[in-house]
Image (cartoon, rainbow, N blue to C red):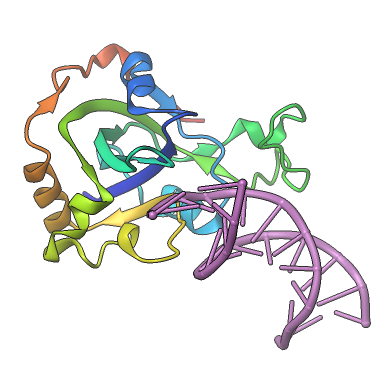
Length: 169
DNA sequence: GCCAACGTTGGC
DNA sequence: GCCAACGTTGGC
């Protein structure tokens, strides 16, 4: 069981969008390390902190869950997508993604300022200067402290089994 | 909107 | 394989 943090610009895809849609294909990741995390290390049921970047304030705002293995991101084959990658092919896909399911919103969002106050979180990649990786690892202790700081979880009851997808190929 | 930091590309 | 140039990210 691993813990993760994913970034999303609140304007393009927020925790509210995820709450509404229940499930998101985490497509468009075009960074090798982020891809490798998804492809090699993410497991079904891993928990994922959801972070809004370029937000006011930028903050960890909720929780999601990994509900699929990594599989090829179809946007890399789509000429009309902004994520199109001419060097990718169906036989040799370059980019993979996972599906994330909404778990909960935090009753208290945790801004970068809030997070920086916590000595125990100072080694989180998120707080390192110049860290732009959009999929990051989170230590268990960090995750637990963050949940504690976040207070109650809102919407936690939502996890219908009807959303389970089967992506075996 | 600025700009520092970073990742990727491509010429050599 | 180096590294300059470029594009992008994301806090401020």
